[in-house]
Amino acid sequence: MKRILCMILVAAAAVLMLTACGSTQKLDRIDTGSVKHITVATEANAEPKFDIIKRKGVVVLVDLYDSAEFTETDEVKAEELLAETLYHFKFYDYQEKLIAEYSLSPQGYLFKGDDLTKPYKLTKDFDEESITQTAELYDKNALPQ
Image (tube, rainbow, N blue to C red):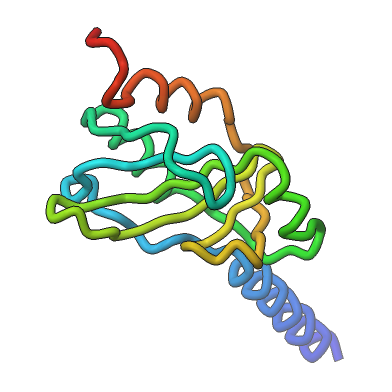
């Protein structure tokens, strides 16, 4: 009887671990060396406000993209997030081909690609100040350091 109970508990623990691990998603990785520049818009469906061409800025934003972990959520509606600030990133290669894009909201939500209908919840805190500082510092129109 003890053996059967132990086997049931081990099986239940394994199922819980697999379920918890399987719910976190990541975006497809981008190779930093293949990114020429990144445009950043601060509103949904708006023209880019920043164009990041300096390597340090590209590295910071690609690292943010590659490290983004998120889960499906229904805590918030897409319309609510679109009405406020939304950072929309587009990554271009050296042939000016769009290789990736996504959007982040200061409230900690993410939209994959150009689909602004399904928000996902970030598993880590979102540092809005870091994004704005990086964009302002490494924008192509920023003053040389």
